[in-house]
Length: 46
Image 1: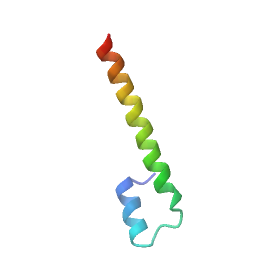
Image 2 (image 1 turned 90 degrees about the vertical axis):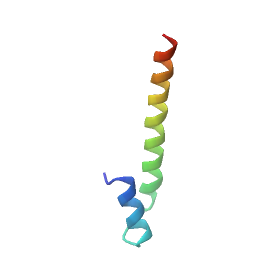
Image 3 (image 1 turned 45 degrees about the vertical axis):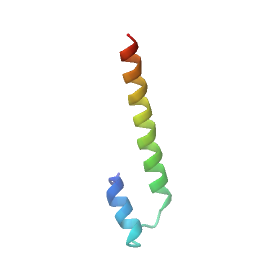
């Protein structure tokens, strides 16, 4: 999978055919960050 930056550059220059992948990448990043923050909060409570 390409980096989000690369995907954004391809989209802006018109080289990207499957633009829905941008949304999927952002969603995946948000899910990972949410899981990391949940683990961090869980550790702080212990």
